[in-house]
Length: 255
Ligand code: 13P
Image (cartoon, rainbow, N blue to C red; front, top):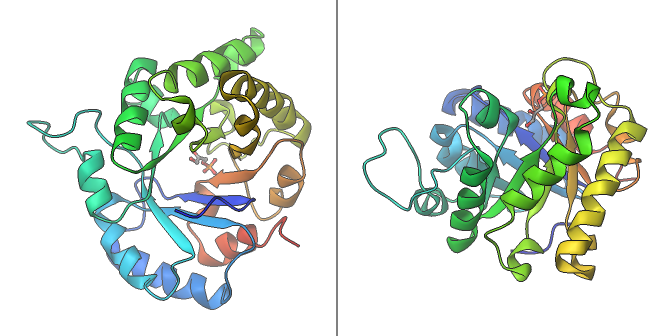
């Protein structure tokens, strides 16, 4: 896989956009973005819409696709789950690991995120490890501690070389789907802490690991967030569901 040209624009459609809507989305998005972005564009559709999205992107190999979750085991009796092997076979190149909704709605633990990252790498998927504090943790002054714990534990089963190939997403839980975005400076403070930890972990290659910001990113605030120190891209939920809005975000910060 070619390296991730920055900025990285990642769209997490969550449990929205079925195959029919996904095909229409891609058609509209490609019409609005007829030439490849100067950065890296990644779509995370529902696993059931992945094949449709890949098919619709056949002429635009510059746009990459991933899945929103995998199970930590390779295979077996896990009804309803998808493995890294299945995701890779279906054409996914990336996987979101430890998204706030996986942690807080589905009770995913740090230990599971570590196993999922390891499994992803084993099968050639790039893990996008998501970290972020709740509002209560932020108000108690625990942001740095929480984020670093999630980061170090999530990456703990990977070799140094593998860590250098991951993507990190900082998504403060209080900013997700709330319309309450971190300011560029709020984001920069945490991104600097994450960068320092990555460099401590793997040395100089840690500077090349993209760190994305997520949480109520819109076409209006994307450029300012992308201009913040150590913010290498964005991970977008709600505002990625509309092709025009997503196209506007993908052109922010690249000129
Ligand atoms: P919103 O952009 O809807 O706040 O969601 C962010 C997110 O969770 C992306 O993974």
